[in-house]
Image 1 (cartoon, rainbow, N blue to C red):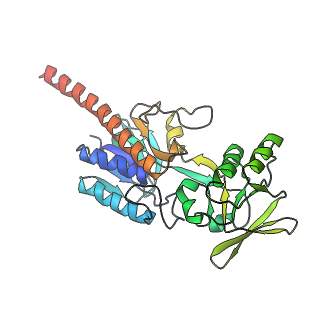
Image 2 (cartoon, one colour):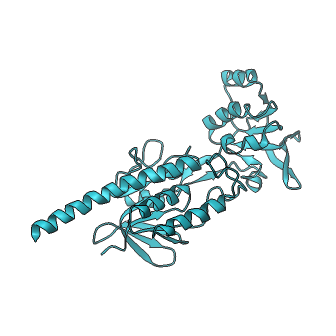
Image 3 (cartoon, rainbow, N blue to C red):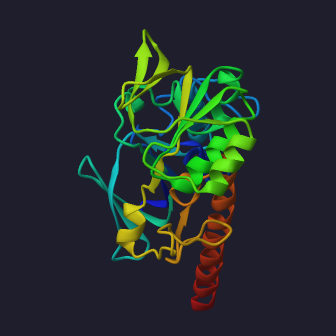
Length: 310
């Protein structure tokens, strides 16, 4: 017999929401949390109704309690492998050497942000080096802001236009990207100042960003920096199992989060890079309901087979 109905891999908003819904559906569910949330550097979360301004760690703590309240299990361990089980379903290998089996799996492992190799960026990431103005823009409103050209070119150029909503003083540092004449014209028309040259480092004084320094020695005072990371899904478990990816390199899913492998769902940033916390939580709930219906169909088939055999 398989250990669980569902194993949820990933303990952020998406995974917690899914595990809670599955527990409420009276499914045997275990949630695995490696303890490395994407938003760990941030002191506060924003845009999550009734939780705005809360410590992200508190949301996780409360979510785990809710999962356990409905009979679910939470374990602080990393899933190192995902395979088809011999008896059907799936085998989830854990870093502690154990293996769990489940009828179905929901993967909510998120993504990682790859930043340009600019000194000072990583050290201030999530505090006053930011990427999402919807998450953090209000907190740095009406201050001198910088946008540095990152490896994610379309995102960066859109970001430079968008950040202007939060401040009248925005400087765009193209760094190693070259805006077209049209892109440059539109930025200037919007009131965004463009400072050419390669960025050497982000300067911090005390516990705050103070400036952006260029390779030629020019220093431009700024209070916060926005950067467009390259979003890399943590989808190794999915791809190793054979889940298909689309032309952009993201795991292919249907509207409920189901992958091309029967019995495997996703939720959150692992398959939806723009998803904020509240969107990820909603996706987790939606995926859990679809997954429960998948298990229900199997339950009915088994009941009919047993009934006919008897």
